[in-house]
Length: 374
Image 1 (tube, one colour):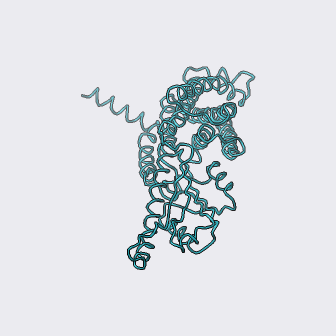
Image 2 (image 1 turned 60 degrees about the vertical axis):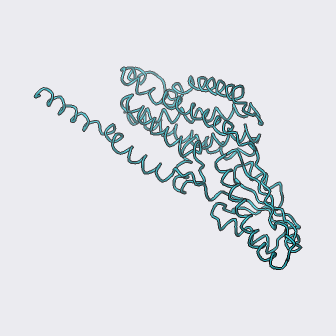
Image 3 (image 1 turned 90 degrees about the vertical axis):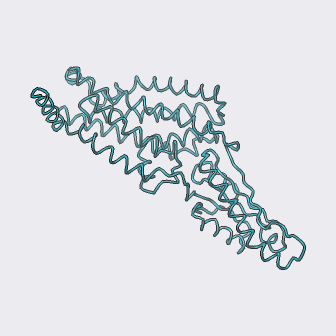
C-alpha cells in the first residue's frame, strides 16, 4: 500500500505540473457542455427571408406581418424584382423568398383564391421542412379568418380559399438527405485528418529531439511552417477526390457547378485546416495534448458549422463562434457549388473569410513558434 500510495502521489503531482492537460480535462468538458447545451436546437426559427411584394396593398402587408409574427421568418430584405429574390437565395443570404403577385389584393376582394409563392432553400432539409410547414399553417390560419366572414354573407355558396400558399423547394425538392449530408461529411473528413495530422507535426519533432536540429538549420520560421503544411495539401486533395467520387457514384450526388472551382476553393479549406493544426502544434508540448485540442476543434466544427444543425436555430453568440471555424464557410461553398451550381461571384465572401483565417492563423503560429524557441 505504501508503494501504491507513493505512486498515486507522484501522479497527482505530475498532473498538477501539467496544467494544460489538467485544464483540458476539467475546463473543456464544462465549456463544451455549456456551448452545445445552448447552441443545439432543432426548432429552427428566425429564418432570413426576402420579400417581393408586387401588390403593395394592405392585404399583402397583413400576410407578411403574420409571417414575421410567427418568429420563424425574419424579413430582412425587400426585393425590387424576382431576380433579386433568386440571387439572395443562391448567395445564401436568405433561406426563404416570399413573392406576392400584383393581383393579390384584387383576388382577395373579389372572393377569389390569391396565390402566394414561397420559395425555400431545400439544400438544408431541416430548415426547409420548418419553413414549409409553418408557411402552410400561416396560410390556413389567415384563410380561416377571412372564410368565417365570407361564410356569414355567402349563404349556401362555399367561397374559395383566400390564401393559396404555393411552396417551391429549390435545389433538393425531394429532400434527399444524402445531398445535404455528403458534402458536410466530406468537409468533416478533411477537418479531422488535416487538423490532427499537423497538430502533432512540431510536437512529434520536439518529443523525438529533432526540433533542435531543425532550429539550427538555415530554415526560417515560415519556411518550416510551410514545409509542414505543403505535403499534406496533396493528401487532402486525394481525400477530397475519393470522397467526391464516392458521393457521385454511390449516393448519386448532383454536381451542378464547376468542378474546377470546387477544387480551387477546396485548397483554401485544406490550407486553413492545416494552419489550424500547426497552431495547435505550437501551443502544446505532447502529442496527447495536441490530440485533445484537436478533438476540441472537431466538436464545435460538427455542431456549430451547420453540418448537423441549422445555424439559424442557434443563438447569435454561437452563430458568431461558428464564424471562427473554417468548416462553416466550406460547407457553404460545397453546398453552393454542388447543389446550387453557383459561381465565384456568389462565394466571394466565403473565400475572403477563409483567406483571412489562413493569414491570421499562420501569423499566430509563426509568432508563437518564435516565442517558444528563443
